[in-house]
Length: 528
Image 1 (cartoon, rainbow, N blue to C red):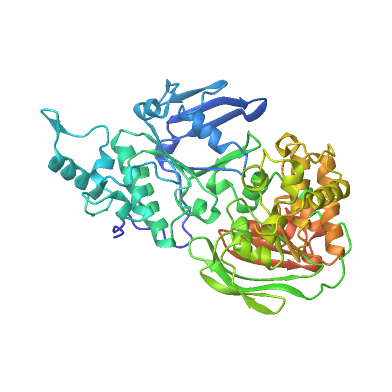
Image 2: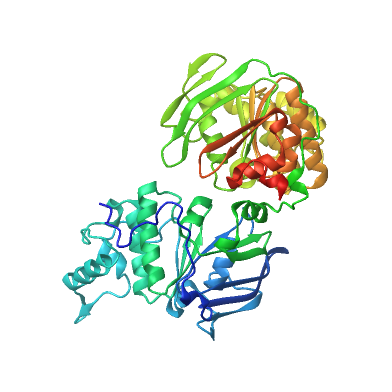
């Protein structure tokens, strides 16, 4: 089903070089783009330059501004300030359709096509060849076959698009965009759902388009892919331009520092607390746990009174790991043992029954129920664990809510206040209270301190340490490396959806984590 690539993949160790065309005048030039939403600055004076025949990686962590930059460039969202030129001419598209007409097309991770229509119908939707008002199906299929042949793809264009793989659907979407005279092609996470062979097929198509002089903006979280196919890298951080350079001038360690915002002086930071002592008994042991296309099989042991931290860039597989552990995403490989007994984890309810708790990263969409009260949110997991046939008496609910509001200093201390009216830090405390009320043996925290104020931040860190001393097992995902090393007994570093390095004891330090994320020699971070 997959095409024979029209251009071969690069040899091992290949580093893309800038073509002579890339030294010409910019194809796309964005200057001073700014955008705010209800007082939140999403873009702050961002510049971005794309040359003809260039594959340009646009990188950054969550909230860096990548999506907002793409949306403002393509007219989906109106910018507050800034200018944009395409081939030297000023443009200001007010919609995605206007951007396409101007020559800028976007292909998203979730292909924005009609899966129930045929491949040919998708390629020419809205611009079908007609005669006397009737669509010329045969001519449309002939054109579609010829168009895809140019991308090395030979398939039945009369078959529904949904019958083909995600990789082929992406190539169809790219072919449609290019056929609409796109001079700039934005690929937003196109490889997120592809296997290694499909990625190489897509890369071959990208190189082919590069040879035609088309400029490509490539958004991805996979650093190996960036260094395999890109010519230049631009990094955004907190809505600002953190840096931009040809790929030959951007070593991996420097790139990771730009993305995470670590200064060189911070890269040598070490643990600031003594080890908590020997870990207790095994709480949960996972062997070869994984899911194809989601996260590579991994081994993980979680012990009482022990904190395991997961570190890595966004998209590295951290959240995927904890979702497998909690059964929110069923694994297709590996085994799990809890307290020495073989178990299966196919859904969160099974994990809860085993004594697991999970505070997700996206607390507003996956954690809190904004319209319910603080009390109702706190008792939610405990009620689910007991089941619908054993409702918690109101008096018990009140007692539980009062206890944790006092214990965690949730403010304001009003159990009947809708939780959506609380600050982010107090919402996070209420989520922690929800799971602590179930008395878990294992607590999983995904970015527990993201987006909260300094005071709440310190309180949650103290709580993690206290829970560890009380004998609970904790699995914590955090992008705050300086914070992670202060309480983690062990840190597992992930890269490209695989567990790659395990650090324990005195080796748990920021410089070692940075080096592992960047796939650099262990002493490189500290020596730089």
